[in-house]
Length: 170
Image (tube, rainbow, N blue to C red; front, side):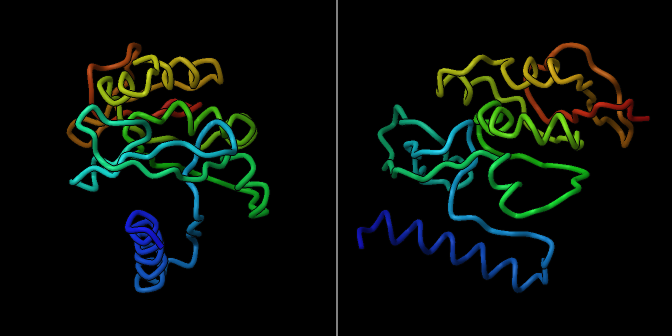
């Protein structure tokens, strides 16, 4: 087993162990990244794990090929019937995850929380407003949370977290 494969295996084991330790029996760990298609994609293993991301890094961090799955397929396989919210922290790959869950987002429109990160999206060759535009096409509205209250926004912010919902949040 190569060092990269061992790292990936250990990360998966750590996630599984954390779910058990925290009694999170309503969460499922899958051994894949969510994207717009099933396959494999290069994944940069940044020295700071919070900055791991799809694509090849200009700083030449180690890259591992990771399996990708569509959210619609995973959801269908799990046989789940309801969903209230999704929180994503995928370093610029939000549009890929969302496009892979088109049916789910249309049929069971959950509240979404995601980050606007133009630099990370540009590194993937994605449009800075791709996730926003895709969600608009599905009827989502956008909100910023400030001082504990949701405020409707009509254009993508320069950066930061955004809440998207098909109903008005107050």
